[in-house]
Image (cartoon, rainbow, N blue to C red):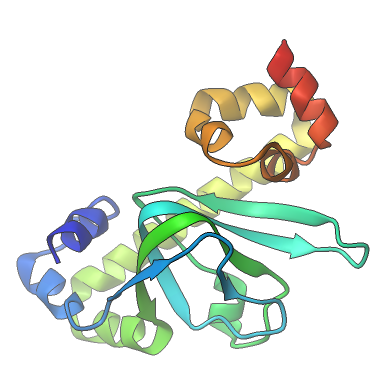
Length: 187
């Protein structure tokens, strides 16, 4: 529980009692590279806190082209929120890119934590605010920056992504071709 406690406290200061309440709710899981935690067409049931490894969410077009929406590195949390909230089948996949240790919490258990402990409500609000700001910045970058500027911004803000994932995944995350990414890296 100590590593989970430290991980959770990265997002919001929770009391010892609030962390103790989470002890029986978050499940420690190990997943090898290539595991699909969620397939398109399934309903998302969990939030994930990443202790180690790399995860991503992505869409797959009819022609098989993948568009990465989110890359989760250690000490981050994520889910396919739209499916989790509206209880409808996801349009996204959730994949383990690098062997991972995660703490998974089922949706209903997480909502029960929030109902019983006010600190978990604040934790959730903090998570949602961070997710909103992050996705809003990604949209702004896609709309206002060219490929080189998006690459430089990622290089400055999250260089570990470029070191942790393949060029194909990094390119799909940046919204550029792998060839363009290779040229940008060569500069």
